[in-house]
Length: 177
Image 1 (cartoon, helix red, strand yellow):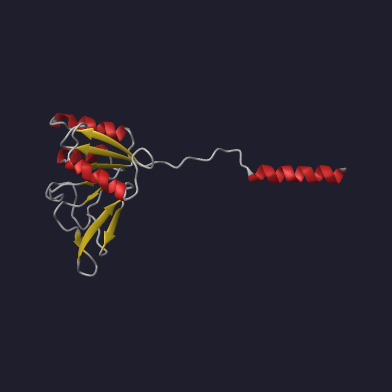
Image 2: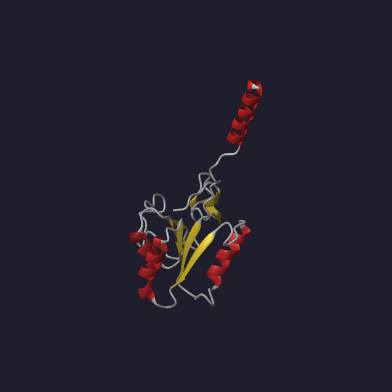
């Protein structure tokens, strides 16, 4: 009888250890804050269309494995600081904008959230970063229509993709600023 009770107790213990009582933690879904300097929710524009297409090509599905919080300036530059503050309060994992006023506002609002600059402006001349080689701070990206830098092999480095976690896929060994 003691052997039976001991056997049942041992089986119960092993069964209990095999099924932890804690609920499985859900994976955190990355959240992007996207502030568009053009367009509106009804007609978002080409930049946003390209952004969404890029997410899909990388396997991200909005609402499923990535969340995007969109905000639009809608021609009212005075709204930018409040829109940026709203996105920062949502604790986005990364902030994206091509609008220099928005990038400056984001730089002032946070030192920890990565800011991806998608602009034709020179970030050094605009005073957003110290230099392309050593930008410092939390601003990254690549000026449009310019090379990101020179790779270790002496070839121009080119950015091929973007991850919503703030990391760029690189070719040629180059770096973003």
